[in-house]
Amino acid sequence: LNDSRKSAENQHPLMRYSLMESAKAYSYINRYEQAHKAICDAQQILIDDTNKERYNAAAIAHIKYYFYADVIEIARILLKRNNNDMAMPLIEDIFKRSSDGLLFPADNQINELLAEAYCDMGQYNKAEEIADKIITERCVYKDYVYYSDRNKIDALAYIAGSYADIGRRGRAYELLDKANHLLKSKSRQVITAYAKLSEWEKAMSLAEEDELVLIGCPYISIAGQAVLFKRYDAAEMALNGAIKAVEKYDNFGPLRVELVIEIADVFLSIGKADKAVRLINHAIGLFSVDKKDCYSPYNVKILAKIAIFCIKSGNIAKGMNLLHEAFEDITTYDNAFNKSEALMKIAEAYIDNNIAIKEKEAAILDKIVGV
Image (cartoon, rainbow, N blue to C red; front, top):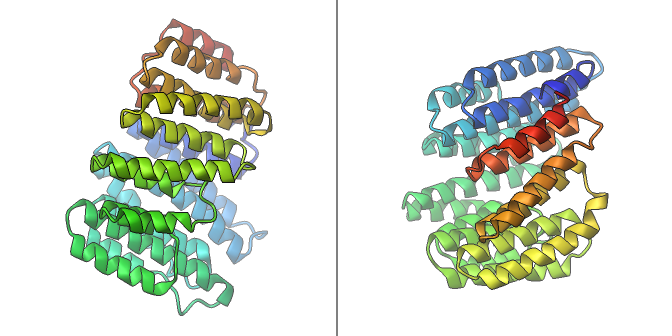
């Protein structure tokens, strides 16, 4: 991370991104003081950068969107780690700074993320207030109305799904009905909300109409909810839908590889180990073809996911070899920023799966950072 910061010291947007990625990583490992400092430093760069005359209002709205979205993501990481004391001020500050979305879709995207964050905190009334704040009919530029509607639908559907989680099914249906009246939508959040209500056929029918099914695959969301309900028949039905999507869209490169890994992982979780292993072998074959055209840190992420699958399925030696291979790949990168991003992908794999850092990892890390 220090390396990437040095490489970006004369490029404010890149420096800001590096700082926010650092803040996420620090939050993930409970280094809250460092996370807070990184956010403050990034915010100062944001202020300096958006005060420059070369940006118009639309450009500034988008620059702020990426920063605010990162802050909200950090707050949601903190909530998962039960650090409400740090998360709440971050969310409240963004809420004070958020606009009504009248001019730019980026503003409404922030409002959608705020609504989701307030749901995560259990403040459903606040979330609904923000969802209603998202502009639809008053949007100044008619070309933006569609995006505003989609943001509102996604916000309402996320809130509906959160109500379903706590057993308030009636309120969940009311919000979904409200969302469905706004636009005939194939929103991923709507699909997930129906799955949380055990409306498997409804969720599947919406997923089948989705035109970009490989990106944030709705079938995986359905399968994940089905597993939580121990409805393994519904999970398998959704996974088979995902497999058909992979077969249909053969030109999406690494996206299809990642989806096949996710499908295999869910099959493993429902006791279909043989099918899961066949799928992971297929993913390895696809990856060997696609990785040459892939962004380097993303290659590391894919390889780490395959490695973790192997470990979960009992092939620990193979899994650790693949993790070490992913680690070693980083030593070949010339770009310090790519190094830091890839390292964070590896760190997530180790942290999420409670894998200890041993001598092999320490030696590779020394090579990466040049110690």
